[in-house]
Length: 254
Figure 1 (cartoon, rainbow, N blue to C red):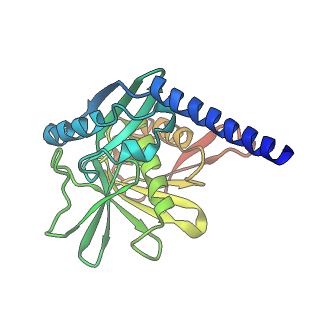
Figure 2: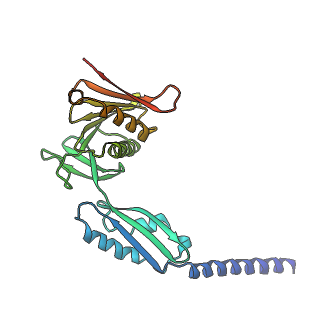
Figure 3: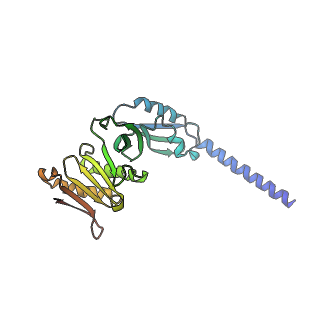
């Protein structure tokens, strides 16, 4: 009898839990899907429309069980669009922001350009036909290189994306000013060669990036036109001895 009581109690507990889960699934089911699009080129309105239709298919699914993959998989073409963010607004609304992926830099290897977006995520590969112009504005993409190999690790590419986003934030422009970024993995540094001539050496380039580039910008603004165009000129930035604020300085290497 005790055994039967225990089994009965277990079965009732399972049924009770299942009822709660089903009840919550009904109460907290998706009824509204609000989708915002951040576009830059005006080229992918059709793809956004398809993505929006796909996201509307989330209606009726359980809010509690909605995963990143459920949302990400609704993007119609992830080579040009990406989910920037999404949030659940209980009891029944999901807000999604979809953005256009903007190509930012390329890695060149054996006649092929590997294109990455501003987050350092791979977009596509293409055969080189003499240039690697960005279709958005016709300016060349930044070229990224390693000290030995033309290719970097996936994590390093993401860090390059972060470095270049910090540069754009401080300088206001990116591809019209930056020519080549060379990553020296063994020295934990990165060299940014500007199209104007001067270059920027960032030590510990994966840490305190925004602060270091902000310090570089302050140093760059203080340079004369001649110093900015001197191919032997170099701005070096590193954490201060006490680690309080990065310090940037200019010198001419002959």
